[in-house]
Amino acid sequence: MGICILVIACVFEVAFMAYCMQTKAYHNKAKSWVWIAACITFVLGILTPIIEWSFRWYALTAILAIFAVAGAIRLLTKKFGKRPYRTWRVVIKGIRMMVIVAIAVMPAIIFPQYESPKSTGGYAVDTVSYTFTDASRIETFTNTGEHRKVTAAFWYPKRAGGKYPLVVFSHGAFGVRMSNASTFMELANNGYVVCSIDHPYHAAGTVDMMGILPLVAVSSCERS
Image (tube, rainbow, N blue to C red):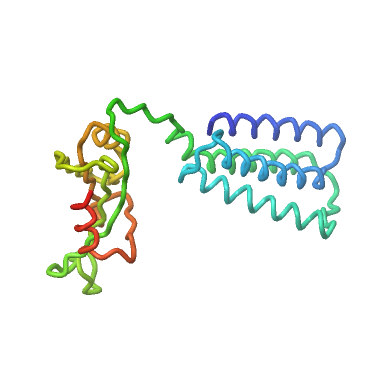
């Protein structure tokens, strides 16, 4: 999807540059409408199964929102600029826009959208994340005196009684607890409980699940 968006953006920019060169005008009004339409189309894509919302699209969403707002302000104020036409300006603007879009969609190209494999087991799966605080240990990676916190995610058979084997996953250097989510789903779907741990200051990124007490987390896991 990232490559597709990049190709569409580049083709449009080249076509728009050619149109401006042919007509000897910048057509800022038309460009403003295009950015607004592009932002609306992208939002509609997110609201449908076409685009799966994730961190891949943060940068592109920000870029589209900025240009759409700028375009709307131009249309409302009717301030499109009256500088004399220069071909080199059109070329520079076009190349600059293609570079910006390329950088914005790079996460989607590096981490392409994919369809999760279907699980083979017979259990419905539920997942939950908690942040555990070790009150007996001071965090050594900071100088704030705070206690050590560790965030862990759990995948387990939903609404199923009894005991199940436990699998603990520890990611490698600069990994994240969600890196093998499809494997965790497959295991839980086949009757396993999976615990995946984020290592603070060693993971690529981790989120503190605020407001969850360790005692509540442990009792919830035992009930599951």
